[in-house]
Amino acid sequence: MAPGREGYAAMHGLVNKAIQSFVCDTYGDDAWASIVGDAPDVPHRFEAMLSYDDPITDRVIDLVSRHLDKSRDTLLEDVGIYLVSHPDVPGPRRLLRFAGATFEEFLHSLEYLPDRVRLALPELELPPIRVRDAGRRRFTLETGELFEGYAHVLVGLVRAMSDEYGALTTFEYSGRSDDASLVKVAVHAKRFRAGRDFRLGMAVT
Amino acid sequence: MSVRDGSQTTLGRAALDRVLPLHLVLSAAGEILQVGPTLAKVTADAPLFGQAFFDRFELRRPTGLGSVAKILASPARTLRLRLNGPSPIVFTGLAAPLDDGCALVVLSFGIGVVDVLQKHDLTSTDFAPTDLTIEMLYLREAQTAALEEWRKLSERLAGARDAAEERAFTDTLTGLGNRRAVDALASKLVAAGEPFALVLIDLDYFKEVNDSLGHVAGDAVLKVVAEVLREETRRTDMVGRVGGDEFVVLMAGVAETGLARDISGRILARLDRDISVPGGLARVSASIGITATSHYCQPDFTTMMQDADQALYRSKDGGRGQYSVGRPAGPVARTAAPGER
Image (cartoon, rainbow over all chains, first blue to last red; front, side, top):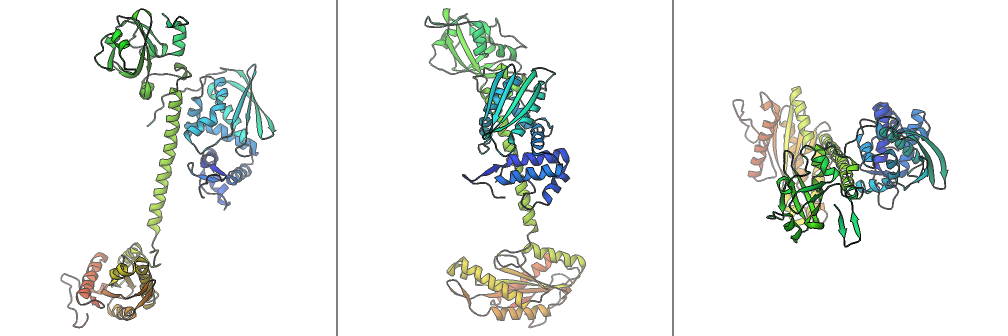
């Protein structure tokens, strides 16, 4: 697949690769093979560092959603959870943990997430995220769309990070208004249980 | 202890700890009076408090300053300090005067922070939020992950390229087989014990065509020659281009050189004319060496190629535009009949 050009709608391969890895690591390589096997318009393997035409991402999400008999929203939330909690992909969890020492700090730091991502991968432009602190440990996350249902990836990500910090949290996806999706987060207990260990100095080999 | 800016601002210990977790306060005599919380954490094995600064730290830059007063009076802004001990740490520092000849020394791990983190369990709360150390660590980790992805991609691409080359049996210019294809078929025939004749063809005057008319003309000649070879050989023969202007014909099922000589004669006749190419007319001929499996007790393709090559050079020496038949060296050598050449 031709790498995307400037000014041309091109999805960063990392997004497509994340969906592929989710399917392979959760349902097995065979599941992925049968999903893309019958689809001549979709590459059989995505490269995280290449770009792909935008519609391919939507197409892949549709194919996976149909194959797994999961709604698009549920599927994308599962992808978000997978990115943070699967032991084979330690990267995103670690990078997100850099954002803060507590879950609430982490929530606030989501506003910086697109900038942080761009620092590491200049071509990956995530839509802006706005975090509103509604008081009494209630927050509203507002995000634009990278693709249809993108906000559900964020829900999965934040849900898994809440476990990561040991917080007890509930989520409510309150739909879209204009171009933005709203997610309500309520933190019921900051330290419901012990969070997972995080050390700044990773074993970079 | 307080920091004064004119008579306006004073900074208490708690405030200093909060904004500069990696700081020291030194008395005029060089005694360590105060240690920032993060610095205290990484020196917990051998606490700094109350110790002589110059005993615990080696001032690497600027050199030769043995007192707090001299450090404060030095025009050098940057201090390089090495904390001595079982696990030394190198700091970048900055000194500023306090009341009564005391000094505030602010430290930074700088790039060395990564090594410090391997040894000490620091968290983001050990750094001031204004300190970019955490951002640097984040960036380092993110870049490492991105580089790893690039590395894996490069490896996969290199592997794919090798595999593609491995599979490629075709010379892209002429559409003939390439050396790999010729080697593969020859190995197969030798392994199966099947007889075959080998014709090795080297173009004469090809370099002159390239030099005088250019490579486009040269390529056109190669295509015409390839066409001639295809037409003059049997459907079951394999024709390959094994070098710039070198071709091979493998004739499976032909143990003797007779048919190969006939075909070589026809090829030479076909090439004995001008070839129309971009930029003019080109004229080449060919020198040919022939051998066949019946010349050998144990046919071996490498040896056969060497013998065909020797025969080819006899053709060149004999005046070009002709073929010669190779004879194997060793006890099974046969004398070629006169006129075989």
